[in-house]
Length: 211
Image 1 (cartoon, helix red, strand yellow):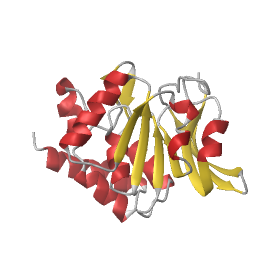
Image 2 (tube, one colour):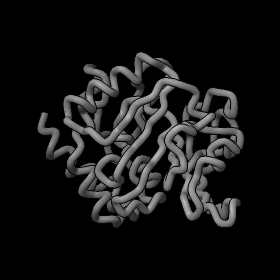
Image 3 (spheres, helix red, strand yellow):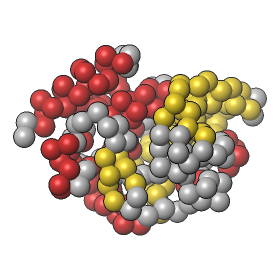
Image 4 (cartoon, one colour):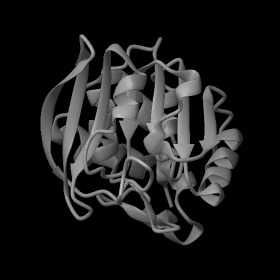
């Protein structure tokens, strides 16, 4: 399989045509081999326009959704970012090319270990993978300039709002356990100014402040 060509086609047809214009983001996506982050039997499907199962009831998100959520953070390069839900590690890998440091929390140790191994193989060094309840955030390294949650929550956890810096951005799917709206919150004077980017479907956020 010509994965490089498949990646170029994915970027052109699935991402740019849907309005993703951030050049740094497109370059980051181009530099990360998505096929490395999917199970061995799914590699031929790595660049399809859909999420894929990665085991433990979790998925690697649709390429466009990864791009849209990342673009919402408006990263410039000097930020510290928290990801809730490491999953395959693909989203964290994209973030690593756009931010100074990425902390990512995964509740399944098996997935966390697998993601950490792939990131190490790719020689990505500005990501720290932590096993735990991501709905609590990761207070130790806060505040964060950006927080991205890759699972659907019933509401935006107060724990995450607290750990977000002033003017920081959080992107999170909010709704029920079957469908959500993708929300972007920008923290202003301790409160979030919310924008809605439309419907989406993510696996449920499981934890103290999730389902």
